Image 1 (cartoon, one colour):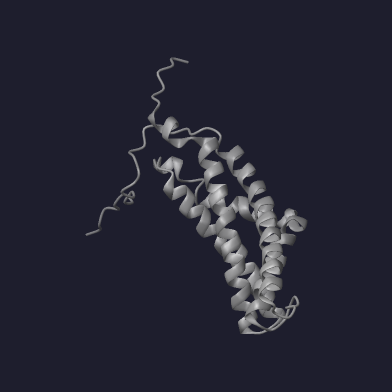
Image 2 (tube, helix red, strand yellow):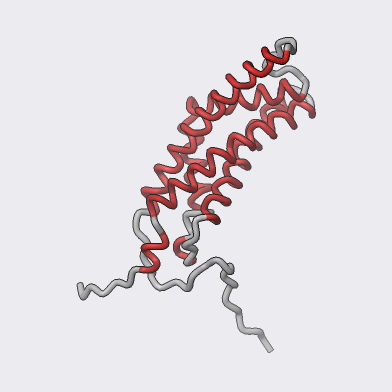
Length: 186
């Protein structure tokens, strides 16, 4: 006796799928990937400037990049995030693939709420940027430096990912596309 395969369970926040073709997903993924690259660079640069500002107000000695401490790891993670734009030939396709396999599939599954798009954009942004900065910091320093860079990179990536999820949602507008019933004859 063989069991019949069951249909995958849809999440509670998903609407029943009424439409098979969702428009503007590839455009939204491409623009979100570009925005991720630029957003990580801007947030990393602003974070690095704020790090220097707070460091000078508190009176700490200068923490250098690749210093084997937690603060050196935070600084390294912010600097690696700020230099993200120079590697756009790698980061844009990586973000495009990660977003395409996560939030790019949500409209086809009938997910019309905004929060899952923002949540998964933040999760994938934190994973991509945090793991990258943590890996390179671990190669250049110790575990404390790796943890600092991982925390800084994940924070920067999560903030940029929220913006990317919001941009994707604003371009695709899945609530409208899933609600509209196509009554055209041709």
